[in-house]
View 1 (cartoon, protein in one colour):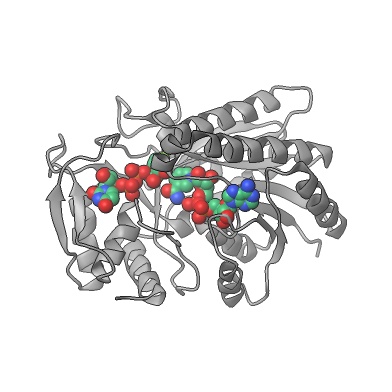
View 2 (cartoon, helix red, strand yellow):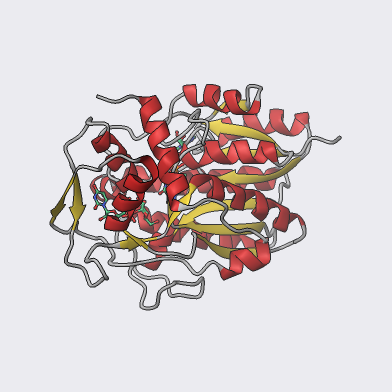
Length: 343
Ligand code: NAD
Ligand code: UFG
């Protein structure tokens, strides 16, 4: 049978590694491009543990056209490339306000370079990792893809808006792409095998990595950032999606793209349900039978009160839906934390 390669930039990262596994499960041959700037080479061993062979890997800085060209020459010589999934980017909102150029250089630079080399090799299908951050605080929730894009609140958010625009511009050009822009809500959890998961480097800013480290007594008790919001229990509401469900949406997206020619569609990827911070704490305790040490604290600047996705478009067009519950995700997150180590 013909090998269908899929190039996965940032494939050693959190969402990328889970997507590599699901691509393999769906019969694709994933090819990882990563420079481990925010991941670890051991992730490749974790992927191998699950799929049974070492994944194809090229150590490449995706902002370097020269390095990309070298890798693409070798990959295209191996066989057909079905598409590219572009995860490689920096993602820390706070850091992006402190070091904006780092974000513009890497996030815009890698997207520009990958699109250029992709066109040189006439590869058509492109999947881009975007974020619900482009919506800011939406007026209507659940938020659908027609909601206005608000002025970005951080350089990180602006890089996602700019890359979306870049892809739309290329799609409207003389050499159009066939692309989907996936706006992720809040990915959480890990592979149930605990062979791969999220590797927070340093102090985790995101809720679930902080929560699991607090339960493992590696950190002070979790601070709930604000209990005076205009929500039923006063804490912020988000749409937390199991990372494997998110990974599978990429596979569904590639299948859909193969039936298209010059598409450029945006899809929200979430569960469609909102969960508050206190509900997450309760769900973790229910799923794992362990108490979460926490205290109520003040609001974190920049947090939106409530956002969750309308996922009708992805369900209908991509024929995709979530298989896992919040409890599943929190059980897997805790299993992964236990593997990483406790105090
Ligand atoms: P991650 O940091 O775990 O993974 C990113 C991977 O890309 C890392 O392995 C890193 O080493 C690699 N990388 C970065 N720059 C590179 C470069 N120039 N060349 C080669 N490799 C490079 O992040 P993630 O959580 O897996 O996020 C993946 C994508 O999804 C990012 O584009 C991120 O902005 C987007 N996203 C993430 C979230 C989230 O909550 N995790 C939410 C919305 C969107
Ligand atoms: N929270 C706490 N305590 C913590 C950490 C987080 O109460 O220690 C709360 C936050 O205030 C928020 C919720 O948990 O209400 C979720 O916070 P995260 O930092 O996990 O996620 P965000 O929704 O703030 O941001 C995430 C990504 C961003 C991305 C955004 C939209 O981290 O990169 O989703 O996609 F831009």
